Image 1 (cartoon, rainbow, N blue to C red):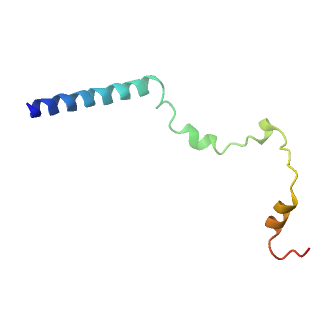
Image 2: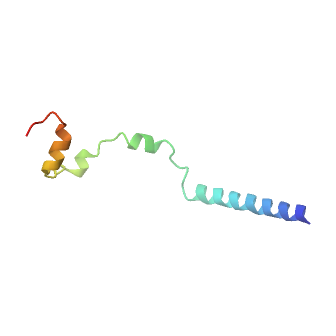
Image 3: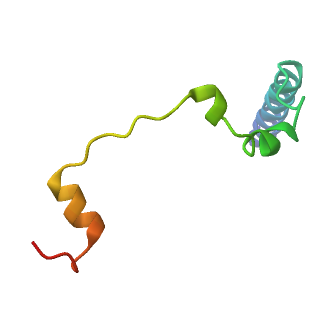
Length: 71
């Protein structure tokens, strides 16, 4: 009895894994495996425009300059 239940559960899990794999193939998960590693090297600076620099507070300046700064 227990062996039959284990076989049924393992077959159900196998079918579920197979259906998940088929879904991922049909939804395009494996269409372009090489693209992301090249896209991360592209410059997006031209598209985004100039970045605005936020004003710094006094605490930020002290932390960035380090202990050698005397006030």
